[in-house]
Image (cartoon, rainbow, N blue to C red; front, side, top):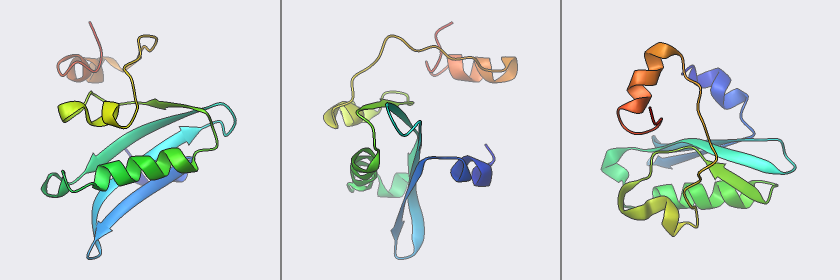
Length: 112
């Protein structure tokens, strides 16, 4: 992913820093009216479990000017996203270039 254009074209971005070091990031796309999708949520493994991911997700949802928020992710450890109120959805599909498709099928992002 090209980071700069992805962030620049996002509706909202959230970053977490500890002592000036970037340890977390997340972003959202939205039409600003009905729907938003949160994607690219990442927390440095050394800082996971410290509440950083929860705070980023809470802030993103709070600041999105919509009622319906989707989340693009592989279900996390110990129901992390479910604890924040997200439920699995059954009405989504993905279109990936062939070389990326196999990499997405293996961890269960796409069902073959």
